[in-house]
Image 1 (cartoon, rainbow, N blue to C red):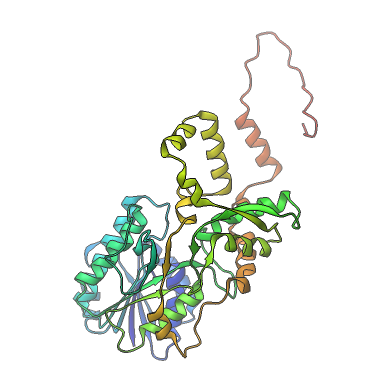
Image 2 (image 1 turned 60 degrees about the horizontal axis):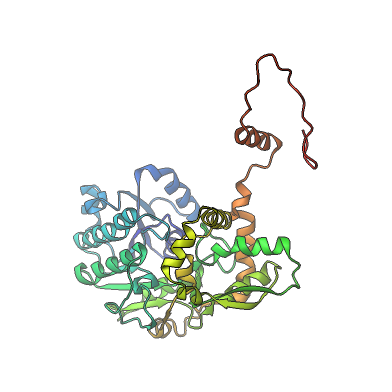
Length: 405
């Protein structure tokens, strides 16, 4: 069976390709930028196959026809059984223009390309973000009902899904994963997102407070977390089932946790103090915008706020997601997965692996140069030499207590 995959070099994509290659006789064509040829070679080696089974296709998601050469387009005619479109911007902090190019223009180009080569089925990996900030339960058969799509990430995900529904010539299937975290078996992750934004805060609490001391934390909406291995297994299984065309599947946790519970699960994994008392973040919504704006207009307040946000690595609109109002029904996905043994593991069972991997590989503090030379350079740059009067003698000043000269 022949497959075509966009986003094969991404966190989810490279695992999906490995899953597809495990099927007997499978051949995977995957889109790759010419500048990423070395990365493609490393991936092929990682997958343990040769270029007859994992075939890199030079191209560009943002170009018409995906930038694929005419000879290759002719070679792919009527050969692709499943076309998986995963390439997209998954970063909430990305600018609107880059998200529009990748999520909207890229999806339109992928849909057109799949139609041109006669792909038998188009699989679009969307996101629960396509629902916007819908208040209530969002079912798998709902789309137009999405609300509050002001954020570029929500809007581009919704618009990309609309393109698939309205413009795709081949039968299509849509998958909306929840907030994807690392592998539940290894903890492996490639970026800081979702619950990872709070890891630095939990680490700070562990450093300054004993683990037995109860603390005050945040409470909010329910945050739907799923490990990447579940998403890949579910995607691979549902894609190969018959009679599922034209449907959408929520690859989510059917019993999601509240934000406060998520923070406590990771606090226990980090041996940090539990948050016994929780303040509902929704209460901050009652503070008039004029009052918030007035406070932030004060230079000291703004500087403190910006310093704290930067130090903890928190995005500007973090409270929007703490108060997330949407819950996702996943009956279609559960019915499709019935009997497969594929299910979302409980967060308590693998949270420690996510924390351990983050602290060993993703903690921003790991990239700080703590050598003596780096400290000296930092001090010399931050403390410009004061002008010295002509004829004056230089004096050696004693260092402050606790510091070396």
